[in-house]
Length: 270
Image 1 (cartoon, rainbow, N blue to C red):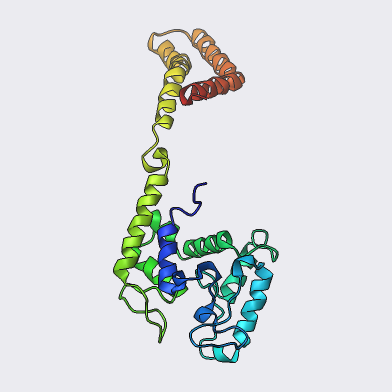
Image 2: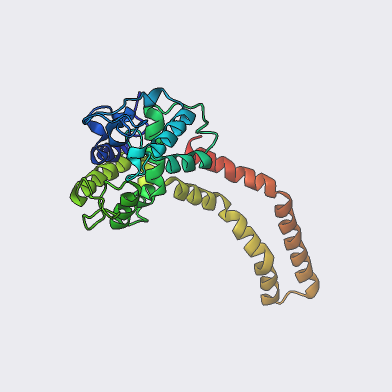
């Protein structure tokens, strides 16, 4: 089975590295390696939980307990999972997409990856890949989402927070994301499509004779009558014939449209 987050996977991996959650429990990691749960603090080791087996409602309750923990008064954080998503952020995601993130959904690896990709999108990674956002702006945006990521200057976005990786590392990872994004796109999205131009040529080819008929029999026919000195009765007959032909074309417009659609389908090979 292919990885649905393949394009963003290098960035997801870097976030795990910068947040320090790739060192052991990964998707099951909580703030401070579990030391902020229910006041149970041990030397370097804290309470372990099975986050990937918990529902989103259960995770929300867990984060609420974390925020009430006396040992968490300084950090005041409820970060959980591989991407250290806090309660406020998770609630915002669930509020934006309640059908996708019901309280009964498990906070498993897929859910965590999906939420992290949503946050990457919110911070502009898709605009960046489309060339509508500068790399420096993206770095700044990401640093404000994950405090362990650096601003373009290399500093952390928040007071007292040091970036765990360098801008050079982030740019290298973004280069890999760009390469995967470009390689994964259909050819017609990378290069200008040629099919519409072919259709246009065929339509013009098949319908140009209508333009010739209306041009000659219409104004051109009447003009020719005056040019050759025909009497007004003859000119009126020619004009009347032109009107009848134009009326016939209008009445047959559905057939004309159908013919054009047939041409389009033939060119596109449908």
